[in-house]
Length: 229
Ligand SMILES: [Zn+2]
Image 1 (cartoon, protein in one colour):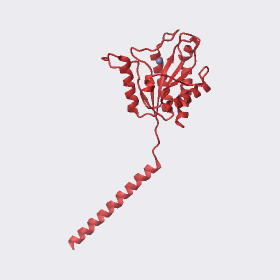
Image 2 (cartoon, protein in one colour):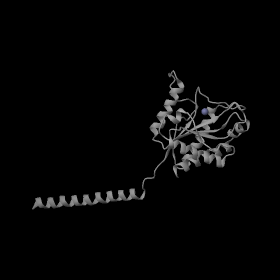
Image 3 (cartoon, protein in one colour):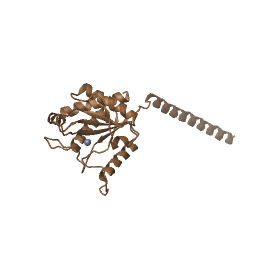
Image 4 (cartoon, helix red, strand yellow):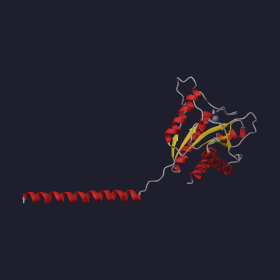
């Protein structure tokens, strides 16, 4: 009889445990169902140049493209994060990404950027640059893509459309270009030349906070358009 009592008690404890576990699991499933996972889109923002490679130089101000690219990349980052995107930066200071011991610093720098892109599992890459041309009248934001990357071409044209609709002098058509940062990966990418540091008026605009915000918002709109958000 005692044995039977113990058995009954054990059975009872078991039953209560099973009921408890079921309710906890049930609650967990209910919570998961209510807060269904939101798809987080990730973008890599690449501030071009850095360190020994300053890029082009402002004809009037003497500012390096390295400095300006970083400012634009940081502005884009805060706008994109505000829109709910996850942002991975290739660089967050004025240094290049090359190993100090590398014999070919440019190659080492580009390979480090490629690794960040590949490790990020990003939906897209934006590379931030400023343009320069001997003819000082050249101006206008222009977007480039790798012709072997179809997603990149669609992305580049989305960005170019948003720029064309919102920013004076922006080109209407994105173009194919041969850039390591775009052809080193299958991730759709676009290289944005925000404007010409060799054009006096455009250089002044590129240096102003208002213009930087305005043009970065236009690029962010192009990103949302590409991502169908
Ligand atoms: Zn550049």
